[in-house]
Image (cartoon, rainbow, N blue to C red; front, side, top):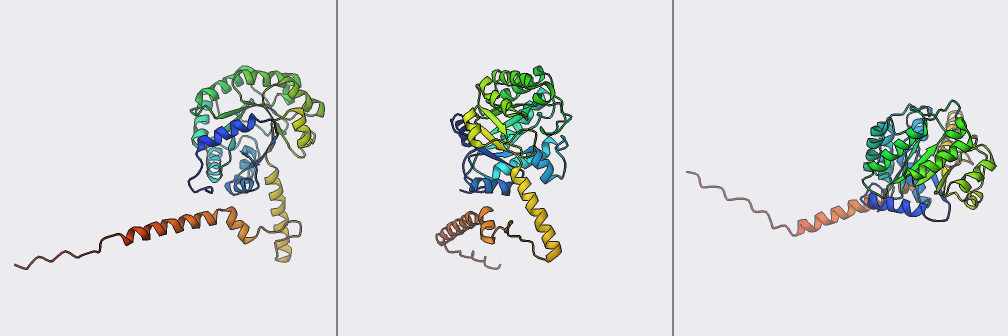
Length: 318
């Protein structure tokens, strides 16, 4: 079945995500901010998708990633993304939106929304993009409390928790690694060390942290570029491209708008328009039409078996 039409149960996507992080191969995970692009990710054959808090803030709200998006806004976007695909959705829940009890409620809300996993970080609230300056992190104890609350909140034990630290920028690589090790002890299924600044640092992290590791690929960010092959050889488990698709789509939209304004035609050779048929297929039109046909056929079948209608006899007039 296709997204939007009843299909794979949420629990099976959580089991699938847990199975993926247990594999030895590198899992490439694109990030998205809306259901349509999530469907394109699924159709392209990727194993999982990330609902990006930064992407949702930028693309859906027109805001920078400075903690301006509310829990409700990120939750609703994630619910729509999870409802549109059958691959696991890893949800960005930033800092958990408050203290430990807020984290508890946040995790349960995102679990109810269909997320297969959540990523929670140790920045102060409100947070900032991991590749921006002026970041601050909470104490290790406060972050451990967030992770304990997240683990306790899970109703489905297969729900995956990713623990992220931004301490490289604030305290150095050594402290970030120490935190990553502690996150594993506190129940994080995957550890995410954000924004290491050198190739040596990228290589050192897997040597020190035995847990499955997520690496955030940010073109133009503070982390040096590194191939998927090298990430896998180093021991990383997930290569996250949190906002690459949004940035490519935004550049294409900007160029198409300029072309439309200047020439009256929006397409460029380097940015061909998605065909009408591909657009309808990506939106699930064939599956919805098939469902419509089945419902009509079932109704017609039932109607042929209905007894003929006989009007009641009118009572004789007095």
